[in-house]
Length: 109
Length: 282
Image 1: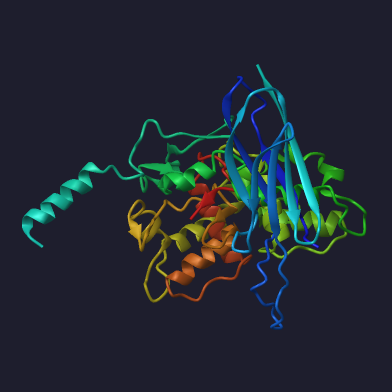
Image 2: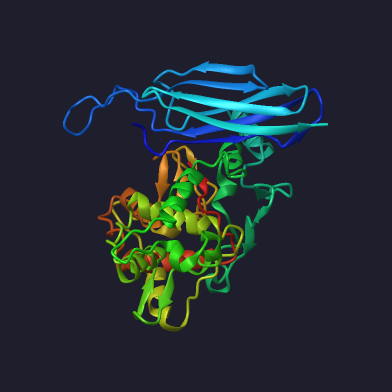
């Protein structure tokens, strides 16, 4: 079970219709690759976030498969065009079956 | 190499303004609200040894600099968040958390700029680490944290973060004067097989390259710093130890009176610069 996992997102609170906004997301996670060994020589089991999805009003904005080479605390920064007011939903999928979710609303005028 | 090539290279060097050159546009505004003082008049006690004091941020590459403009991008803030959770946790036999006595971490604004500071009751100079341990052992009935432990670095980062933008203002007279003078003597003492003093690099060669990196003036206003070289927070004493090790000397111990004296003196050289911790450095 991964510890100290905490999702964070940064989305502007308002935008004009059709504007392209910048979105930053980060989840604190150790991203253990499965390649390392502990002090006793045993392999430390792989434990990573393997998928990240962002949707806006139910429509997929970005859907990412994450591999073990991605380092600690995966950070994604991307842009999205917002046609109307609504809600971004961000979802991270953990190897251990945990699903972490965060949301952010944006007001479009 | 022909004379002409050398001249051309020299000219190119002149045309490309170095990153640390005076730049009127240069500004560090953290989270669009905290103005950081990047350059300040040198404290009087320096007696002209530096024309002005300059934050180490100025000597970093633009990519590294940008990470400190926004807490979302600053990797050090992840550790600050961890300390916020510890702040509210009851830690010792007394069932008290930091919050039991101090409310929000924000109430500690103004603490970081004046440390290390003389403790009248204990009759000793205390770093922030020592004060935190005093709270843990004397007030909370908890075990002291290691000087360089994650808990300790996270907590000093939290305390620094709530004072960001305030000028460093350590006292150097009264009961600490002897310790301060000892720190100054250490600063100008050449250590190690390479016979380097702190001043050799940070007073006489700031802005110049040391291997592939630009030397700064070596101020401590950004500590604890997040360093890419270690991908973790680094305490002041750990950095001092690293510097002295690099002179190929036997180093002083982290948490020793020696490094505490040096901490006070180096802090006083930066009196007037802003608290930046957790700063982002290479």
